[in-house]
Length: 150
Image (tube, rainbow, N blue to C red):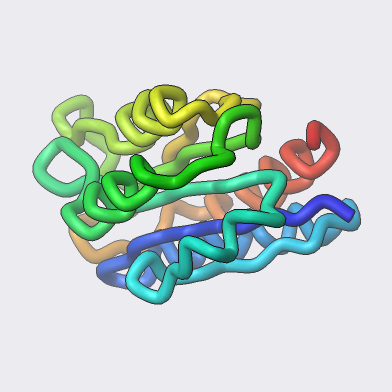
């Protein structure tokens, strides 16, 4: 059975909702998918993981500090090469919002992960949300697609 781990950081709960929707989509196609907040992540849980999904809100046009620290912790991990990965972010709808997903994706590639789907964004209305209508359903569908790919 494919094991998927969704590691996320969420400030106002929007990224957590996206992570849960992704997990639900993965589970709908038979994957064992779990979500974990970045500050509760245990490096040992990566061993049996086939797919790592990483998500954060965009902070100051970039990856949030807790997620940057998580990615730095992965630098000393062995056995990442060839594991599959997917990155996502939540951000306001503005061309000035910046991105975190693409930057996470780039770092995961550097660590040896195989990116199986380009990074995706969920749009939040205003700084604290809520998510744009349909975002959770979209990420549930993305999760199902990812599950079929691994």
